[in-house]
Image 1 (cartoon, rainbow, N blue to C red):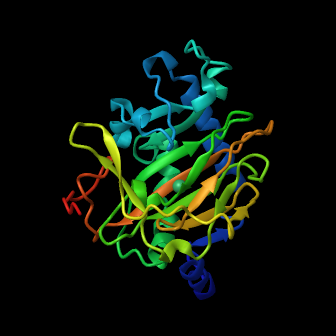
Image 2 (tube, rainbow, N blue to C red; image 1 turned 30 degrees about the vertical axis):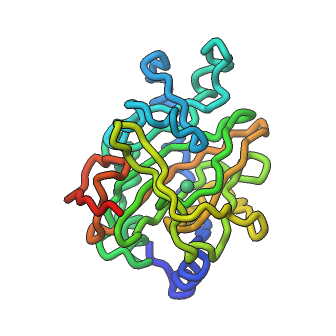
Length: 281
Ligand code: FE2
């Protein structure tokens, strides 16, 4: 997929670009049914790991840190009763699958490794686009958790910054079911924090700037299924809780430029990366 000059300009200006009809309906259906198969095959007693960007202690566990080159399952924060039992079926309790579907699962690999996505990353400035992360996000009905305002480069950093996120809507995303919201143009404001491995084998946030993101200027990105949203890694964005009766499935890929340094302290140890360097700062 190649972008027009106008689209590239818009992406540079806003840090976000909505591309309608980017994914075939058959591909959306295929990815959704494959994700369901994977969840069906998952034994929830294998791992009770709750993913929430608000609670770093919970994300610091081995299951999370070891997921960069595996297919692992993460529950919604509200999936469990205080006694630790699932409130509803396993299929309705998973927050996401990550982080190496693009390598390890044949169906996701086929979709993810298509030239059109790396060409797209190339057309917005990545000299050698390298796919390092994939996530299938369920945003379950009623309990699909909030993701607070963040920059993807906080979680996936390169020096210099090169991250670009591809967010594929596999179902319609609306304000009601927890669509993305973004602050267009604020990708130029610098990186507020980094989420890195700590010396004690946990994780931590290192802050550059404590100022909260502004509330005004947030734009909802309501999109129909088959839309691709392109996100600059420095663009602040969020998604709110899904209180509706409809899920909001999305698949995301993250590319970095192979020419940029990939610090060893990044939490994510991807399945394949040419060289990991330490550029601690
Ligand atoms: Fe994000």
